Length: 135
Image (tube, rainbow, N blue to C red; front, side, top):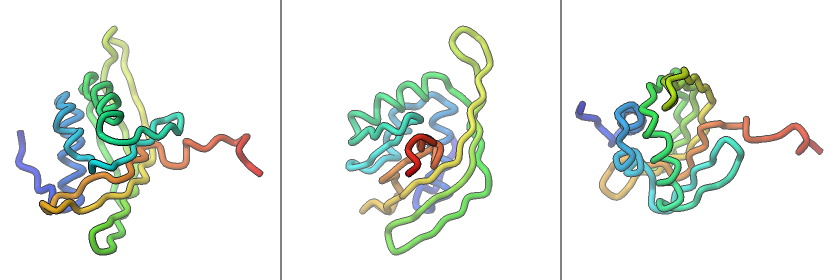
């Protein structure tokens, strides 16, 4: 596996994407802060590493290739906001092709060891909102 510098935001994201591609659910889970929240495509909040592990197991099982666009990163001290577009491609267990896209809106926190970790991971961005929620 490539050596990733997780002490910069781009390196942390590159490591996470490499874990997905290689089916490394344990490595992917290590990218999350212990108090993290992962927001799934239906807008459900998976809180804490035990709940997030289920999502990482499922995502990594497929070993999909994930590519991202040029991110917009805003950093304030040990908090960063990461925005970008991504595309995942691969095959389902039955062999049919899968292609997923999204707009990530995440909050990262620098851990005490210097690595950047997801505090809030929302890989579907504003797509989790439904039009019927409009006031």
